Length: 153
Image 1 (cartoon, rainbow, N blue to C red):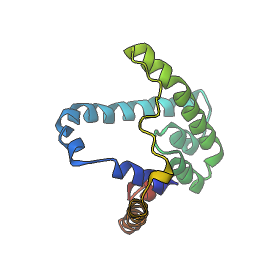
Image 2 (spheres, helix red, strand yellow; image 1 turned 30 degrees about the vertical axis):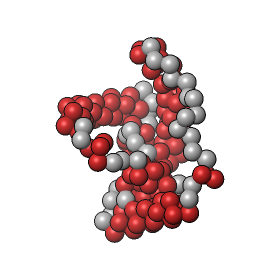
Image 3 (cartoon, rainbow, N blue to C red; image 1 turned 60 degrees about the vertical axis):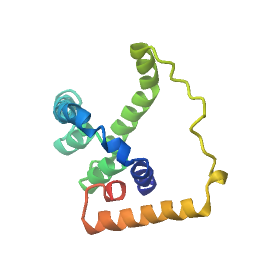
Image 4 (cartoon, rainbow, N blue to C red; image 1 turned 90 degrees about the horizontal axis):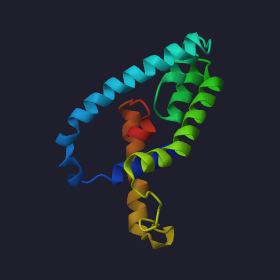
């Protein structure tokens, strides 16, 4: 499933997306600092308030993919609490973000289904290209030993 999500993300990019990349540079630089600061604050919280051990606090504090983070935590014996923390984080974000976005921007965020494409509308050629993108991406991710290789490949 992670490889499918990665392929969906990759196939949604086009050269038009990259035309605006220069506008994002400041935001991306700020995002790096925000992630480092948020992870550091969460780590200290989990260590001092939650009384977690170092490994559990570290992986619980890291933003990122649930599967990858819990997988890395499991290799170090900290999967149970890490998975609960990340599941709670995802639940809270998914539940609250639509309301926060609507309150802060005033935009109506209801989905109208206009971007929905039923599977029956896909041609065999498109499906074959998508499956090829998944397989090639996974192979490249494994070959290059990327972190989160199924998603990033």
